[in-house]
Image (cartoon, rainbow, N blue to C red; front, side):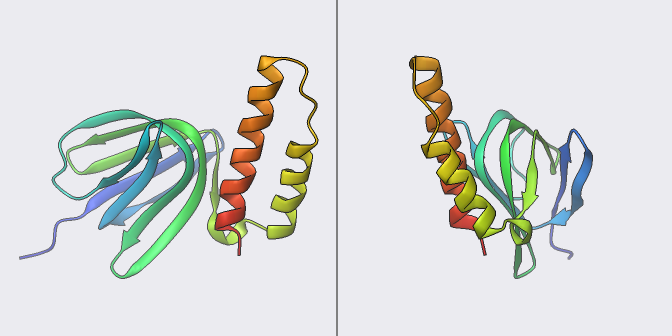
Length: 131
């Protein structure tokens, strides 16, 4: 009996970032991390900011994702996101520059304070993923 898998599709505005059969998918939802195994009930949720992971056999692949939507239906996981950066392409020096810039953003009102906090959070997540 063949082991059941999920078909995962990762799509950005630029096009298809990943497509393939996987054993497990974990992604940041807006209110916490969600893990998906084959046979999962249908689901639609908002994708948060963080690390997307897929497991193929004993190997993991990871991306930094920046919001969007996820649909799980009949063992197909469809992830639509504004940005999907493979972990191996996240450069530590670039992320440190982004973090410095985020920390130097001026705060003049509630909107700019929230924008600064989001920029810092995104940079810190990438820093944890950087090689």
